[in-house]
Image 1 (tube, rainbow, N blue to C red):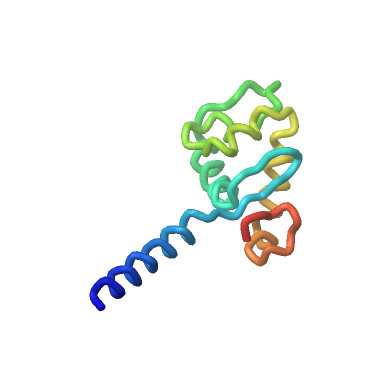
Image 2: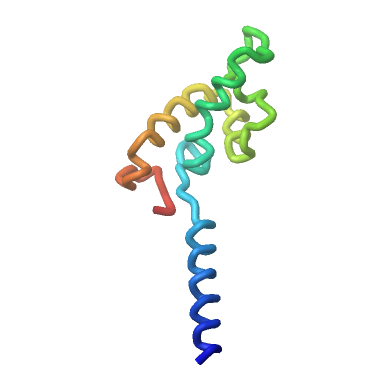
Length: 108
């Protein structure tokens, strides 16, 4: 009986861990980024607003130089269209991924 209780407890812990490791992703123009990373993007942009700037001729958003930019978003910075991609990702992330109606969102 004690073994059954232990197995049940271990199973519950496993289920909680499994749920916490699953993430929702946004797939857009060949990039796959975590919804959580995109949600944090605005905070990073605000933090970086008073920080160092890229030269004016650079097409990359300033946030691409932020040291805390998540690795999945760093890949977006390799694109010449990074600014428009970030803008679209933020639009998608606002609520469409939360209710999983956008085909760009996976892992719901």
